Image (tube, rainbow, N blue to C red; front, side):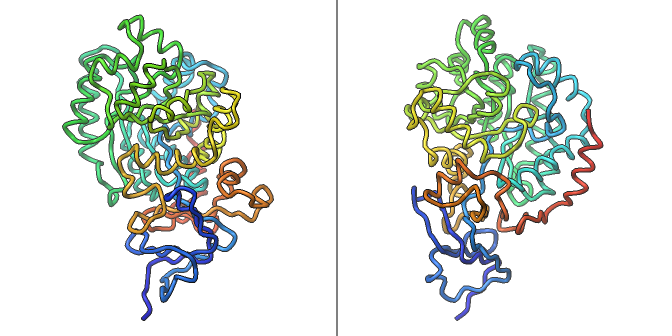
Length: 432
């Protein structure tokens, strides 16, 4: 008896990520109601028929990539302030321009980011920015999955603190769970050096009350570490620990300048780290001790950061650079393997966001967030090692089809969920 599914991908190589190291050389993936109904070798496809059939010949299906730290609207600031260290970059190049952004600017900047992410294989991202309603509307329209947060900064002002907390609470109430659950919210005190102790404590309390995650920048530069030590007598991670801020619901971006004790503390508290290799390299901030974090048992993921400090959103590039930087930092070619980086960009990220039962791998019953990468290109042959080729040789340009929640957002290189020409035109009209 024939069994109909919404979408049937046939004759595709499958890299599920879980279980580790498994590969199906010629398989199928059946998708219905936004979920993976079945997958396996072609000979086990039995009587499945698809309302829509997608050929996977010459391609590899893998879980959609998850970008755990970015500022999506900063596509509009791509290339701004190059050559400045973080503190000057923020104060002289970025913050003055951000002050001019309207919610409509934020929307189109995010649409441009979503277009770039779809075309390069990212299906879910974590965002922290201002006027985040514009970001949420763009996510809704683009079809992507996202964890969104309004970045709170009070600089010690009680009045500003109360305003920031109200904006955050209202934003969460409006958007958490929207878009059939594609949009979820987080609480985001920007960083220990821009937030008062009171704001950090209030953020922690709000996250606990609303049962959602915390999103924060942490120990990104030497300057930040020194500033926090001067203010508190403690290093940033130690300071957050003294406030009982750290826990499994915390996603900490960067974590470049950590002491051995701080590394152990992050692992002990179950904090997940978003490693942003390109951004840290471009701004000259340093190289995070990823190998040591992993060795201590910390969950490490990968983020691009915003386009003004990267300057793109290609997660394939981030996986490759993450490996290379650990190897050169430690003068050890085994410091990080290709599979480590792929897991960081998929299942580790899903664990960090507490949705590992929903996405992050190709498994029956999980949401169908899947990408198809074209293997029949010069830079990806011969295929001696699939994972190595994907991490070290592929780029976002090799992604041909993208599925989120069972919906095709890009099919055979054509984006279906937005008008590419209009997005480019609107973004270019908003140069700052």
